[in-house]
Image (tube, rainbow, N blue to C red):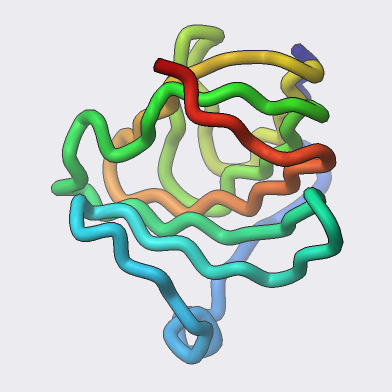
Length: 119
């Protein structure tokens, strides 16, 4: 796992009106996803997690080609630690985790090789 905070040299601001214009898939548990791009198994998505999201909103999953994410708002926690706005994280291929949001959170996620739900 690789982690780097961008807060030392980058200021992140979200255009809420532009965010609202995106097409969102609501999972019904406080978690919504907007697919920004997809080619084969590679996907670039935004996750929006409400402060009242179910603790198990994200299922335990494996990242076949790894996972890159940038926390744009709020915080994400998983078995590897807690990451806040401005943190950029890369999880190794075949890494497994069960993330959860801490408060209202928005995360930009890139899956280079797809995702598989783990029982």
